[in-house]
Length: 408
Image (cartoon, rainbow, N blue to C red; front, side, top):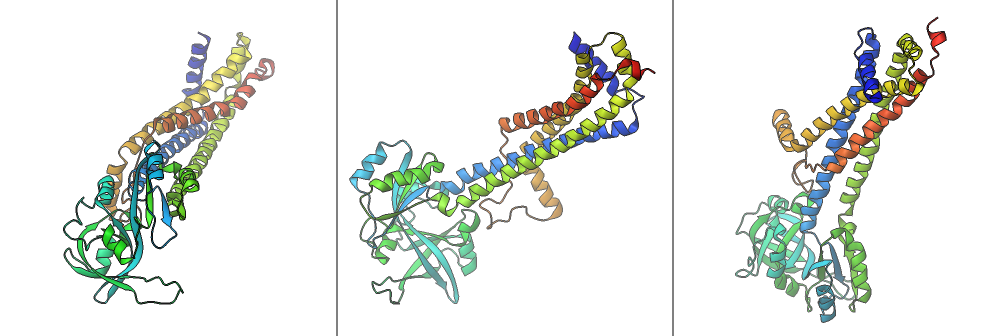
């Protein structure tokens, strides 16, 4: 009953026709600022969540989560010990052996460096994201799938013959003539981002033979249930592995993408929370001016028996209403924009004729969005809490007004 009465008085003070236009303007500015802060914060957090989700589902679907790299030029093989250990470890989904090498592709006078990966059908079956059909090299062991950027750079078409130059290693580190292979372009793949400009997929046995790899391959790849556990897990396995290998994980090669996402998320959250804080300062200003304007009304309420806590509650509610309105409107619009972000960006790109994320540069060519309830609730709670905190000082000033001096 007491709270509802305080709410009624707070609404009356807000809607009073005697309230000056300047106070109304400051009050509306605070509401708009809080709403804008909530809107942008929810939208940008959803975009950061979207990038992290795409990082997991797109980039981490084809790059190695963790791997051993052979020290011996003869290669590295999967022994029975590591197979048994992996079979009993739920953290590891699959284990592959493949061959990897850097080379130079030549088509006429055009040349392009590539990073070749020799794989088998078992590898392709477990990595559909590579977009190379299983059995592609069964009929043509000299076949080759190239990234979109490589195909465009060399001006190749499906069925063309291309020359591959592989460096020759010597024990005395002297120069030797490169090994030459003639390969047939079987298809074009698009993995997204920079990978399209240097990736090449070919038959494992063909590449291993060209490099004189006598064992299983040059790399052993671990596909993990949680890619973010790769750094710790590869060291656990590496310490017990009997062959000489280098240990690596995706955070060494592509970890900067994840770190950038986390950094931007933190900066966005801090910056926009400060924006909401600044908007909350306007609540302090509007309430202080409102207290001065309503001094006589407050004095009259006190002479009628209103306690200090009751007066304080009136002005806390008055300021909180502005915060609730702003946070509610901003949160609603932020959720709406996050849910329909793809349609909004498509319309903007069509209207102004430019692309937000250029294909071939980023690992995706669209602006992703992944709206999470925790972000929405946290943003709304933080905004309303800051608004309530902002009302404490003006409400205390109102409660300290002395009726005798105010009504003179």
